[in-house]
Image (spheres, rainbow, N blue to C red):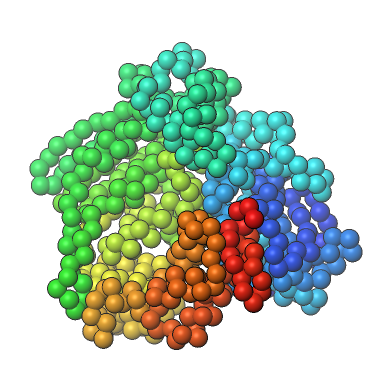
Length: 555
């Protein structure tokens, strides 16, 4: 939306004042992220129940006077946008803010958080708890509203259909045990594995969204059913197929339990080690031809979004240099490009019951971020990006590359590990001879990453520089802030506390060699400030001689 459109929307929201889907806060610089997460859950669930396109959490408004007063909440744009990842981390399923808008109102800065409605059939939780609104108050989501959302999927969700002849005896023992352990890992912040393993099967299955009030769903048999129970899903085949196309031909079918079958299928794939030569050296970098986590993410997405009513199967074709995954049913919500850069979260699912159970079992770690994660992992392995073929409206074909397409692209990724994912995606299209937008062409030309005339663009060959090894380049470039923040918290977890000198000694040699000593000192100070403001650490010493500990660590 344009600035004027946002101002107009803000005016309408204030005029109508707070409802179940709008919350105004004055909000200072250190407003609690946990509290934002609770409002995210409540406003998302209420937006679903009201049939609204979005809920709104607005900072910079005085709740008593109904006036814009401005807010200094996260004034740095990068910190403000980081909120999306923080919400996704603890929301269940892992959806996040649709957008975070900054509005320059005449009376001060306003932050408008656009919250998508909960997907049909799937209420949104924050750290394991469901929230709702009662007037202007934040309250737990009542059973009536919880059931109202969950019933949405029963009328049109193939995977939510109850199987009257099925019982818990139809669960595969090994798959059931693995499901319990996976559920315990996902909820380890509030449950122990021993507790989950001790639950009766019926209790666990309900908690893991495999059953509905004790009744067995199609989703349950797909994920943890015995192989011989697949007949209860007839005439819809519950099947994964691996097909070796090159150099010889072979195939194998896999039925339930899919919780285990996806791993069995991956073991059939030949996964040799690729030796990629580092530019300017004789030192090779070895990577697996296919990243297991990436392939499983793709397989699990295919299972979650398969249109089972079309009586097809998920097919994995293995070629000499690529895997091609095909599942029935068109791309269900949006386009792959929107998910590739982490800018979109799904608002609905073809198989809501199946998707939610897969989230509970850790098969889909980050709904809406799976495609982003696949692209990011492939970029870090210096290989071509995955390709989606949506030419058939009733199928999705995903190609995962397991070989170099253009050495210039691979060499560039090995040397320029600081490239933004948006630039890597554009470079990937260039190496494949595909068109890119004019603004991307201009951006890449300015960085001297591409050459040639439109439409015959190509990735620019790497120009040698003074950094002779990949390790040396990493030292020059440094890592992203999340890496350094994790080093600090890991140090405090291990040793309990740290002085500023301890932190300086920890990070000095790890920060970019391009930074001066003064710049390194300021960098460390900024990292500590960020952790303190986000509530992760606290100072138990003095301002002049700080002693840092984890925030939840006793004095």
